[in-house]
Each structure stands twice: as structure tokens, then as C-alpha cells.
Amino acid sequence: MRFAIKTGEAGVRWRRSFWTVLCCLWVLPAIAMRFSRQFVWGIEDFAAWALLLGGLGLCVELSFRVTSAPMLRAMLVGAAVAVAGVIWADAAVGIL
Image 1 (cartoon, rainbow, N blue to C red):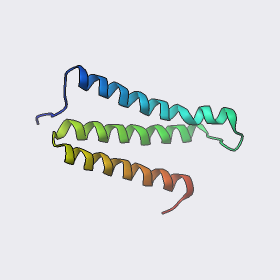
Image 2 (image 1 turned 120 degrees about the vertical axis):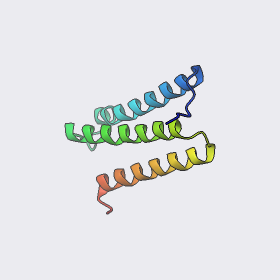
Image 3 (image 1 turned 180 degrees about the horizontal axis):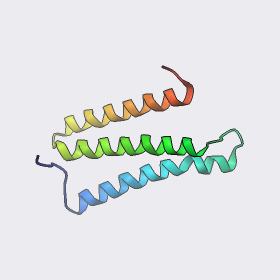
Image 4 (image 1 turned 60 degrees about the horizontal axis):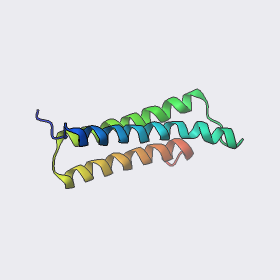
């Protein structure tokens, strides 16, 4: 299989920024817990959040590695974000 992601400095910078944003999103609930008593997460909530963000990150990473077509990349990333959003909404309020 031939990978389509850039291996130069631009590709490394993009990947590092992307994973940094995901890590910041993972820490965000811990920060919110310091300021609001209504926001209470346990270790299992943080583990589930980490799995969701990690799965999303891996799907986005894979979509950039497998294809070089911008439209297909956008569709794959959009689908991954939509699936993660539905899983998150279901975990939060039980919509399904």
C-alpha cells in the first residue's frame, strides 16, 4: 500500500498540531470540573473520551495516509467527525 501523506516538514507540523488539539480537547473536561460543580466526570468518562478522540484521530490520520484526493479526504474526515459526534451525543444524553 502506498501512503499519500506528506512526509516533509509541513506534514509533520500538521500532524503534531492535530494531535495537540486532540490532547487539549481531552484535558478540557478536567479544566471545566475545576470551575463548575455541575460538571462531574469519573475516570471511566475520561477513558471513554480518550477512546473517542483517539479513534477519531486515527480515522483522520488514516484518511490522510490512504488518499491524496482532497474531496475524498474531506468526505472521510467529515464521516469520521459525524460518527464521533453521534457516539458522543448518545453517550451524553442517550439519543439512540
